[in-house]
Length: 64
Image (cartoon, rainbow, N blue to C red; front, side):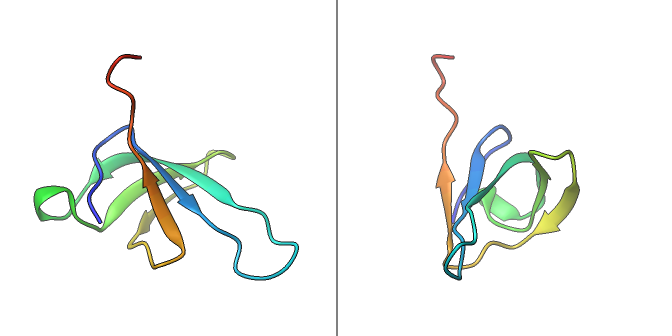
């Protein structure tokens, strides 16, 4: 998995009824864009994250 600052990580719910969560990458701590990442969730909570297989990266659109 590779991400850059500004990309979004979408963590899919793992049980029925659990919603997906989205976090913005605010710092990349791994080599060459790899994890761990410092992320900020929609509610303002920040944490370090090493995403698992239930997470996908939505790359920031360079045109915006």
